[in-house]
Length: 128
Image (cartoon, rainbow, N blue to C red; front, side, top):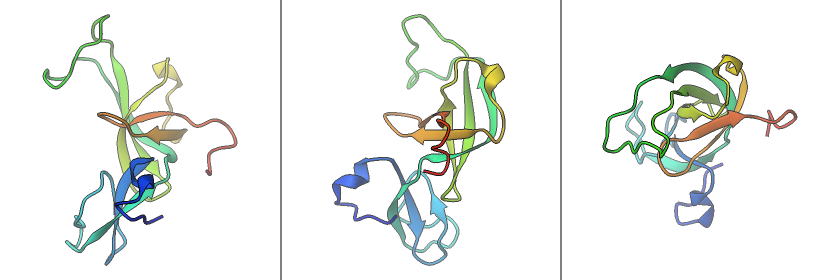
């Protein structure tokens, strides 16, 4: 779905871009295509996809900008989620147990402040 950058819906969902010339999709949004250099139009990306690969971050990121939480650093999972829009998005994986993480599992990615976050997609919503 291509949207007008001035539209209020541009702030909702994952803000990517789609090239007007070669149709490549990127996240985060950029004004130019990384493949051909052509113009890219803002696009709201579907936030559902599958886990492409992942790892566990076992040491605290560089500070600043990282701000340790009140209880101190806890290892967390990060991965690439391949969205239905043919783009992979790096995201923190919000799962309580790292043993539950599987490549190919359905995830929903949301953007907010900082890095996108991914959580398991509820059954029945995989194709939303």
